[in-house]
Image (cartoon, rainbow, N blue to C red; front, side, top):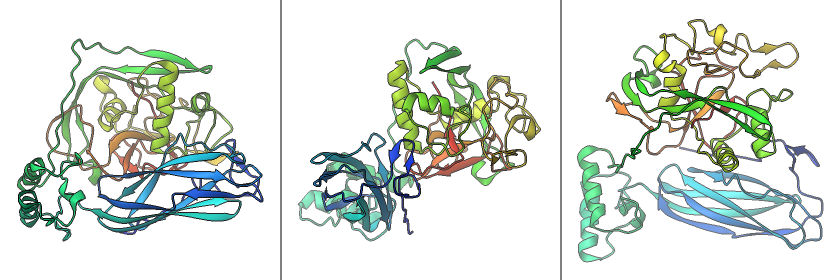
Length: 435
């Protein structure tokens, strides 16, 4: 599968001297610099990303900013949201931390293009990503891989063609435990997952709380735990099969995170639809949401997070107060959601609207359907028909889930599922907090 992506500061157009959210997008005229390393070698498994540190040195006499584009044939890049994007003074070194994520097995050719004053500097990522357990590198995982792995461990004769693939449990070594892990996979057709559920000794029921950060106030609504039917056998294919889920109590945001709150925490507003800070923030990546939450936690001393997909759906349905509505709070979408048919604004055209301007659902939560799609914590994966307790979704994946639909859709519901690459940002993707 060809996975080619070009990213330039979240697809902003490069205009000389232009600024977006306080960051200069083009480098200064006459700028000079170097970029190291020139190459990064890949020898990894498809489920094991490769981290790299890129150093950009100003060797000229004027300050400049950098822009970075990239492409890959079988993977994608993720940039650390804490990377310094300030001006680089003469003699200064700026370090970018990037992660290359292989999406499939094979020979990978990827490249970062760093623009310094109109001159491109290249960092090449090349090598091989091996499928987990494919120890003989023949493109499949079967009994022949097991015999090859056992032969290697018994004779240490270099028989294993792909040591990264032979490390089936991902502990950095090839030992007999990798044999047992591979056997378990061949028997069950699924890699074993070791989960140790953590139960608080003295569980405390959360309470609805109001917080103020940087002069911006927001409310977290308590959702009492319970059991419900998640998904639907009568709806979208991705929502099947319906299955029983039991959740512990938690809190969830009364509204989507507003541009005002994001600005108070991060000092910038990435949104496309501006003009009213009570609109939900959008054009934020899943990774950007994690950085926002980390800074919010530093400011408040609390442990905010994204809701799991199950927590989101339980809250959207109204929790234990659910009346069984089709949408989050009504059987009529127009009552509770900004969506394709009603999102037109005479001044701004179609787009997001200020939060809490439609009716809430049974728990007093606004915009659980429509307005903007909300990132949740889970990787995208198929549902199981088995009953689950506090599920967290697939253990790995390529896409992160978004829930609720948005202003550009007509198919908003409490069961519909969206998804996107976690490093991509869109003007209809934002977030809602959980606690």
